[in-house]
Image (cartoon, rainbow, N blue to C red; front, side, top):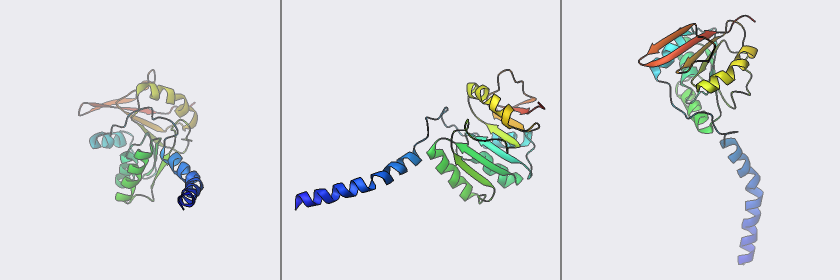
Length: 183
């Protein structure tokens, strides 16, 4: 009898293993995040969206969206569409909860993925809170994929040799603003 129970349990375990592996794969990031999650303070979110002059006609991409506060605010306050991209499944869960809590699911989409592998060409505004080295690494992709006139706003970190058009101080935190030039 014990052998039969063991055989049934093993059969169930083996039969369900692909499902468990698939769930684990969905919950694990494709690779380790490049930065630790530190939320952007609300007053900085507001300053970023204001300096970019976000309107209902914009599509705001937040690269490394964390809990989704930037695309949610862009949608809720300015009527813009928002796309949040993050590699961390925990942040994706939090961002989707934030979207649902604020009833902006019709205007905000959260994508789990590597921001370096996503197509950004639809964006009219891109927001960042990444490290300087990542901003510099991302710059060629922004220049290649974004249309001239697309606004780029970074919390805390610049883009190396690409000088910002505006630099603001928001309660001791830096905000940088650029526009993608004609090529």
